[in-house]
Image 1 (cartoon, each protein chain N blue to C red):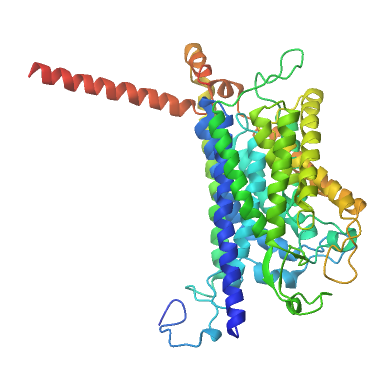
Image 2: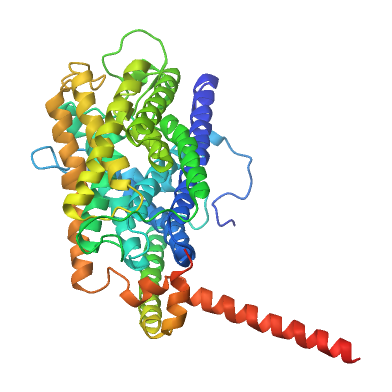
Length: 71
Length: 456
């Protein structure tokens, strides 16, 4: 029993192909990957929007002027 | 891998591409340094983060669909045969070849070499939009240019079976067009919608220079890009291949290195030409910019980019002159476009990559006129019309147009540009406030501790 399909390397390497675990679940892994990627964009987009909204109200004139000096 | 020679060739090829990938990582390090050096202090962290996160986002999407596009799309153009489902199948993300596979030692490293080109395409766009684009907007553009548009152009014009090579005789050995013209065109489309940074233009429309905050960082960044460019050149070649494997018109038994079209060249040739075009670019840029450091160093890059389309076949002196001519045109064109259209290309990316790429393609069409574009029978030979049409496809159809359309959609939704108040405070305002608060707190704590010891 092995997750990669081999439990010993007593094999002819010419006959060996894929050796990653859980072969046969590639499509499922692809869907998981897509969800992770698109979910990341969603989380980042929402956080950035909130962050920028708060930022518009931050910083009095003195602070902004100080920031402008930070070349 | 049957036979020791085949095994050695395969393992050598695997290692060769792996080394190019490590070298090419320096391109991205260079872009990061360059962007941070060019941006103002109040935008550093966001500028850096914007470019760094291109790496994972383009990587995962290039795994999910970019690499499949390269193999399935060489003839995906009206009248050319359509999508090659069978050819693309081994490179779909659910294919066994896209994983740890003892029978396939090349797919992973070849994928990675192309992936590093993808990062470069996205990073070129990233530089031109610094200090005013929302990161979320840029990262969407990065995925589109890095994992969709450039790789479609590579399938069409940078693949042995690409329709542009067969029909137009398109020749672009080291990617003047397929990386640089498209990325420059894309950046132009985005900045046209995005608008200039506050203060870039005076009320009467006169452009103002916004100097880099750290010229030394910018210089080291450019030198790192030069260094990574060596890896890029090597990665564009097939290092060693037998004529019977190419299965084209080459006769005899002499093994050779080839360009991406499987036409013969040598590492030695491209080493000559890389250095001579770099030199031509640096020398011309020094003269035309009257010794301006930014333009002189960028001119070296522009020289290489201009000569890249034909650097597999040029004589070194031709490469030098092509690089020099390209830089003069690019420099003049940059300032003319800036004045005329009020466009703020913060790092000169449209000029150095986009205009250089276009000029390089057109020049290669003339200089290599009649040379075979491929070792296969029936392909059009290299010609100026084919390469000029190719330049328009790269810069305009697959670069400028998609960049402009997506930026327009983002602008309409109000998610392209940061608010004016934030642009003035700087994107790092929150970090700076937190930094200053933390500094204040720790100083007060230290003072309190000191006071307690004095009392004791």
